[in-house]
Every structure is written in structure tokens, then in C-alpha cells.
Amino acid sequence: LGILIYAGGHFFFFSWRQFRHHNANMDTLIALGTGSAWFYSMLVTLFPASVPSLARHAYFEAAVTIVALINLGAALESRARGKASAAIQRLLGLRPKTARLVEGDLERDVPIETLGLGALIRVRPGEKIPVDGIVASGRSTVNESMLTGEPLPVVKREGDAVTGGTLNESGTFVFRATRVGEDTVLAQIIASVRQAQNSKPPLGRLADRVAAVFVPAVLIVAALTALAWFNFGPEPRLGFMLVTTLTVLIIACPCALGLATPISIMVGVGKAAEHGILIRDGEALQRAGQLTVVVLDKTGTVTTGRPTVTAVTAAPGFDETALFRL
Image (tube, rainbow, N blue to C red; front, side):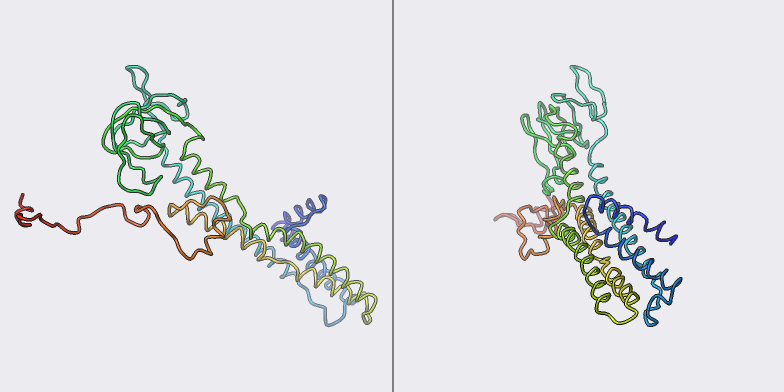
């Protein structure tokens, strides 16, 4: 009883709250199964004569095991959520903390949170671009691989768009901020990953719908079982009625139904984010299992992004050895 209250009390609390709203979910089934197992075991322990001799078995360990398994699943889900959150933190790490604000002839470093629309910002070689904007002056090459997957740097001139989180490589330029804060492309990518983690694929919604129908169905079957054994069963009728009714309630606790879907979503989205794959919602993750062909239009997706020389061919009239010497 102590374990049920301490480790499984939240199941009973949430199932009671659902009951008050005339609803049922996985918590209701867990509460019914574990509560029935404990109640029946107490009945057998305190009043063994009230049930047939062949049914005098206690099921305390069943109630405890169900609670342990469900809590273990919740712990694994929390762990997976933590790993997925770590992937989000790595995305957040792409954003610089400060920006070099240009005000007339003066330049100073300010936190990016203080930047407003239209602010002029200088980006020097090797620095990350703090927010989205349009190049106002200067020329440089920018590594946009975190956005496009393409490893080769892109030339940026006056009038070209730049994206926050990308890396400025060679030159220096000044750009005008057009999107700041949560409006930047990187912030929207991070929001998409978070939304995907909390979204449910059709399979997850199916589990909820099944539970909503399953709970009333189980209660109806249990009631019919009780009535059948009470009206048509052998003596002791009351004992057999209790045993069979509680058996239905205990067996109906579907541990896996409530655990498999959320854990698989969290692990899938988290692992994908670790490898640079952003899954927008749970439905996309589920449909990915049906893929037979994948078409890639980005060379950077399937290469290391570090070009190497594989062959040297001299033009007619030139010798390769002499070419290398030159």
C-alpha cells in the first residue's frame, strides 16, 4: 500500500480527475488494474474464506510490478527528452551572445537581445552572424552549411540576405537587421524541434482514442462478468463473482499501450536532431518508416564537405611533373 501511494499515487489522482470530467485515459486503466489487484489481495489475506480455495492467491507483486514498469517507462521518456533537449541546446549554441553594433562612427559590442529592427551590425572574419538581415556594405563569404547542408561558402555582397547562426569566413561587412529574437530562421528551427517533441503522431492519438473506448468497455465487461457469475454461477456465487470481476480489471491494464508511443517519438526526434535532421512533427516521423526511396538535392547532405584532389590532368603540351614543379 505504501508503494502504491508513494510511487503510484499520481495514477489514482489523475484517474479521479478524469472521472470527474466523465473521461478516461491510460491512468484510469492503471489505477483500475493496480487498485483491483491490491483490493483482491487484501480480501484474500484478511478474509480467505470469502473466495473459493483455488482462487486464494495474493497479487501484491502484480500491482507493484505494474507501477514499477509504468514509472520506468516514464523515466526512460524523461531521459530521452533530456537527450533531445541537449540537441536543442546545441542548436542554441549556434547563436552568438553579442553583436557589434554600428552607431555612426562608433562601434560597440551589445547583447543580441537588445538589437532592434534596422540596427546596423558589423561582422568580422570568423564571427557568427547574430541575427537575420541584409548586407548594407562590404563583401565576404559565409558558411551556410548549418542551414542548407552545402559545405562550400557563399559570396555575400551588398543587398544579399544573411541568416543568424551562419559563419562569416573571409571578409568583413555591415548588415541591417531585418528579423530579431524569435522571428529569426534559427529561432524558428529550434521552435520546430520543440514542437515536434511534444506532437503526437497518428499512432499516439490512436492509443489515446483506444484508451477512451477501452476503459468503458472493460468496465462494462467487468459488470457483465459480475452479473453472469452472480446469476448463473455455482456456489459460493459471491466469491466466484469477486474473483472473475477483479480478474478482468487486473488483466485489462495495458502497460505497453501508454509507454511505447511517447518513448519512441522522443527517442526518434532526439536522435535525428543529434545528427542534424529536424523532424517537424510526429506524423512525419511515423511516415518515414514507410519510405522506400529517398531523393537528395543537396550534395552537402551526403558528403563530408571537405573537397580533396583526386586527379591532376595536364593540358596538351604540358608535362604533369613540370606542372607540379611549377
